[in-house]
Image (cartoon, rainbow, N blue to C red; front, top):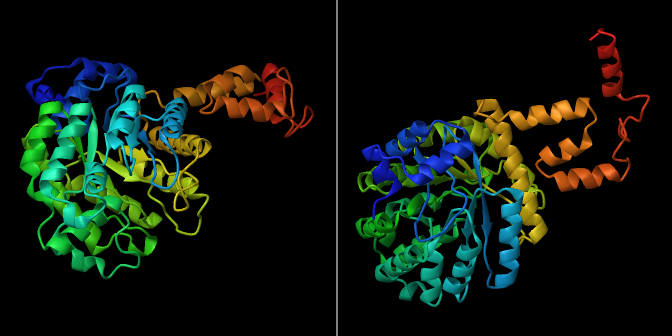
Amino acid sequence: MSTQLTEAKKGHLTKEMRAVAICESIDPQIVLTEIASGHAVLPANKLHKKSRYAIAGRKFRTKVNANIGCSTLASCEADELKKLHTALEAGADFIMDLSVGKNLAKVRQKILKNCPVPLGTVPIYEAFARANNNIKNLNGDLILEIIREQAEQGVDFMTLHAGILLQHLPLVKKRRLGIVSRGGVIIAEWMTYHQKENPVYTQMNKILDICRKHDVTISLGDGLRPGCVSDSSDAAQFAELKVLGNLVKFCRSADVQSMVEGPGHLRYDHIKMNIEKEILVCDDAPFYVLGPVVTDIAPGYDHIVSAIGGTAAAYYGASILCYVTPAEHLGLPTVEEVKEGVITHKIAAHAADLAKEITGAIEPDNIISDARMNFDWETQFKTAIDGKKARSRYLKGNTSKDSYCSMCGEEFCALRRSREMKKKNVL
């Protein structure tokens, strides 16, 4: 089966490319050129029926991914479907099913059926579960089998931890927090036990055959991402990044779309350098970052910490922000925390898009500004990123017809007085 990358290289505009061009208000030829170069990805497994496609790359709107998924200790299929709908309603562009435990194929099928946007997974989770959570039973054939099954189900993109190698493990000994990636530590433990190279890395040719057949985008996972700011930008992180850069070229030569996952926990002053390094080493493959989380002192508020780092990362060139919720480092997020995580990161993404002057980014800001000057509360609520919350909060202290709010009251309202001065041609 032909991939979006294959068609773009041929100069053929697919219906999916045209669809995202309309959503982005951008020339379809720019979409085609960016995909052909590998500088953008359009995850689109044709076995997954979607109504909303999304493109990720530096020339397009910064996208937000929301993670959902069942835990071995908490949650169930029904809970995760509620989280899916909540994340979509809040504006998530991508969804990842990070379920662990039993009956993963059944859960994933339900999520795929109810997910109108690109869906991603981490196949090593299911492979480990099938191996009875035992490294001894995990092998390359099982990993390939899981990747094939998930591709045939319709998964649009997969995180594959192909960049962590045996030679990298001594570098981890210098870290304060070791390996914090679930997939990364499974691979590391497997390599240590079997004294063999990473089976995802050694079987990349076979994996590419599967992904090309179903047009599955590979998200090259950062198994050695730093898990605390003290480990930010260390030798282990950048050794893996170098391998990921080579794998990007490998994927492109096989006509398989690829993007690169990034940290993680970073000092704020390291963000610009990290983004620039990824762009250089990985030839501007779309960068998909988790945060980055810029301090470790705020459990319960890590969605805010992540948004601080995410705005900077997106401004400097990251294409996708993976959301962090208030439950990060504490437990499985609730439905409300999923909503809060998505909205917080949509704000971060939008702030970066404004600064980058992405086409159309400033339009909703201008609409709200004009509505504020006219005390048009309904337009403000309709345009706001979370109109329900804005309306609810406003009505706690005001009526829908007031030409001021309870913060200043009528006499101290600066906008009301500005309007009066404008009528007199003073302003």
